[in-house]
Image (cartoon, rainbow, N blue to C red):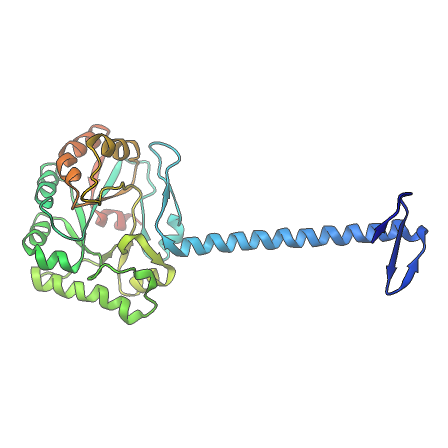
Length: 287
């Protein structure tokens, strides 16, 4: 299409000359076509964006965005989305309750102090353990169970489960840990599962559900897992006190020296803020 200085429009279609008087009609047709094209492109962009959002919810690394102090964070999957897979990251409630969980990949001497603090405050917790932990610290695993805590499944080898497309391989990671736990304690393992490193996929969540498992992510955590770079007490309190919220599932690591040192005081401070400690069993029962 060619625009001339005098504002007239001339157009050649398949070699046929269109008279200037036809220009206005041609321009209208062109504008209608352009509007339809742009509307189609915007619709496609919205659809692509929506599909990407759904993919992010279904596959990836667990992530949180804290936007308001004292309120639950925005996660990369909603509570309603997770519900279809018997999965949780927090409880939607105005009540000041929280759920303590610990990931236990190995034992380095900090768990006894953590268990002592939990016992002092009568606070139930869930310890998500791996095969190495049960093999090397069976007495602590037995103590967890004896003191009323739940021992959950963090897989046998702690792999990236989101890359396991095989149902057989996925089930083996969980079942091998179940077997070891029962051999060690004489009790069946609770079917509570936490994906290693928070890596998951929609198919993983469905596989866990098909095995009878409840999957637990978290709504509060901080960087406490580097042994040679432990956070200070002040850094820990800033995150754990400032970001606590009603219905929180708190993730801590039992390998953290900082956690072992501050847990008694931390639980006291949460109590002073009006929080009560409940077990994941109660969260599941309320859904």
